[in-house]
Amino acid sequence: MPFTRVEVDGLGCIVPESEAAVIDGLGDEEYCVSTVHLTQDQFDRLPKSGGF
Image (cartoon, rainbow, N blue to C red; front, side):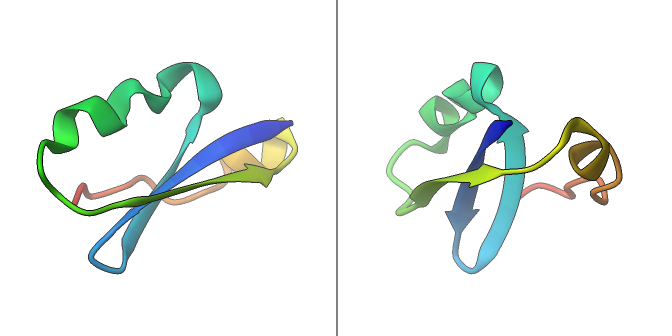
């Protein structure tokens, strides 16, 4: 399944594509966005993001 990885200042998080609007809240921050493919189980086992 495709997911979206958002990276800001070396910190990243992976969100479902449907939640990729998180990048709208980054304002003027420089960020990188990429697509990663994981199973739902792999995504569910990722550690929770502490934010940027």
